[in-house]
Image (tube, rainbow, N blue to C red):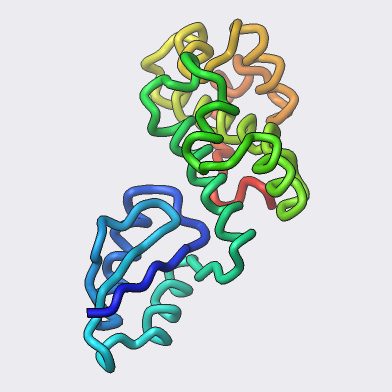
Length: 193
């Protein structure tokens, strides 16, 4: 059976992976490898795979296929940054972001940072900060961690550093955010909009 790899924009969670898996089945194909954030490898019997149905199902869920190599690389960078901040079990505080991203994407950091800026109009550093602040908002909403613990988990050298960036990005101090019950969390696929 033929294999085809698709790169998919806006996948940010395990629910996204399930939705793409459903779209693959709906289009008459099967996952050849486990679908991951931003990528699906499928196999299908010739004549049975309906790519238009697959594309339509993806669009209905807020996803889209990425055709250009540069756009695929940018999506890989976003996925690696999301994995670093959301799924790397505190690796953010243990290794340099640039080393992690370079290894995950397979490009020198200078190259991937330049490509990211050219294609998105935002620096990669800014994107990582936005991800960290969104994760900090999530952790604050749980009321399970101290600000010191959150700062450590997000790789900040101090509570003050986290607090300063939090205020710069949100316009609120951490205390205001918690005491006023502000809930302005943003979907990860909309951070750069």
